[in-house]
Length: 397
Ligand code: PMP
Ligand code: GLU
Image (cartoon, rainbow, N blue to C red):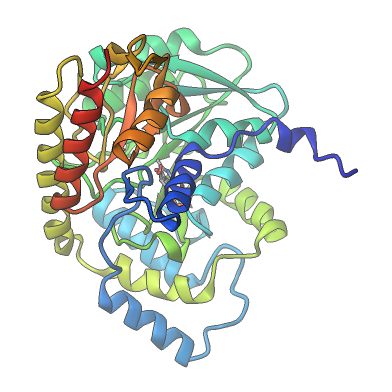
């Protein structure tokens, strides 16, 4: 009998992907499931991006590319970093990968040694923990609760750093909470980080453009931590390109070279066609995203308003991304037809079976009191989903 590796066995399946798989299976059985489980825009990739892909194929950009990505794509990313974020990343400090997920994995695999501690503020995106575990690092969770808008304080970070700390990973805007770190908050974080020059910080900015209240701020803008920070971004979310699998990193040349070496052995490079399409996306004026951002903002209002009508739910106001992360712990300990709901997983399963709405338990994101609702769906779908969720929650006694 084949025995799988301990590495694999110790790894959890991605909860977001598992839940969307479950809802797909139920749909195939004919159940009318509304899936708000996966963080995926419901818009189509804009036509001018698809056109660039057709052009790339017709011009035979269909062979292996340089491992860190085509030079013209990295030039477009370098200009994007300057234009949108005020960041100076030279072409040789940029590596393009098969999604931001691989970009993060490349960095962690390149930097973290067995036993190194990696600070992960919770709530966090599900994959951070597993990527760190596979890299034999030790995830150290720093809890930020709803009372602090789910953001860690510099004091918390400082108190969590030990001699073994090698890395910090966080996202802004945050998946799953929608929290956005202000320039002042990032500056205060930088004051802690700069005292530990051997620590690498992954700042995941994949939701950069989906920000409803303020200007996006990057941690790498501060010169005194620039060398320590790795900026992650990609085209999946803003440009509705999740299936094209293209993300990128801006980092010190040393880390960029390491990522290149790593992916040179794993995937060589992302698809040549996706790379050419991404050039069109990154050269476009982000102002054209305003309709999509406004649509997400309206949906946020719709979901928040609906959640506020349900007794017992507590919710922050997400400033970015497309998730709501309500505290639903009020319902733990209640029962449906004698069956107890003990935690977020029970509640998510109950809502899947009773309301036919797929959501993801907060446990997977490091906050067992909460549940994640992805509101990247039409207003009608969200209205119906929230109606069902409310009805099912009110049945619990
Ligand atoms: N970071 C965060 C916070 C995410 O939510 C996601 C989800 N897709 C990713 C990274 C990875 O994005 P992708 O691999 O699609 O570029
Ligand atoms: N990042 C998205 C999410 O959090 C997509 C799924 C995934 O890559 O895990 O749902």
